[in-house]
Image 1 (cartoon, one colour):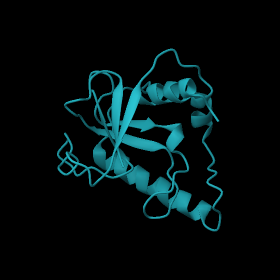
Image 2: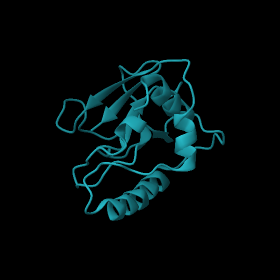
Image 3: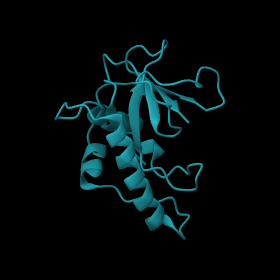
Length: 148
């Protein structure tokens, strides 16, 4: 298993992609649905939790981190997680994260390797991708809130 430093390096690399172009919320959700469908098809009949990573994901996971960040998990029944996100959309459980936009801009697609293979509510396995579509009053600096 990868160390925390490598996981955070991957998270940071995905938070600041080389292109710098924002991805629309609709495009990210559509891409998530396509990935979820392909993951569900390949994982049927298997409960191993193993998932194949792309070459890009593998290379990002091999990088070394020289910084730190923290994450908090909140669930749909928790206080403060009942309205729209800062883009005006409903947050999606197991896909939406809240960030400080000075560090991780809204509309950024993140890859968090520790979440790869988590069993989701619909029974499919998580592919590790999250979408930064919210900000929070307590989110200052290199922190994220993961909406579960």
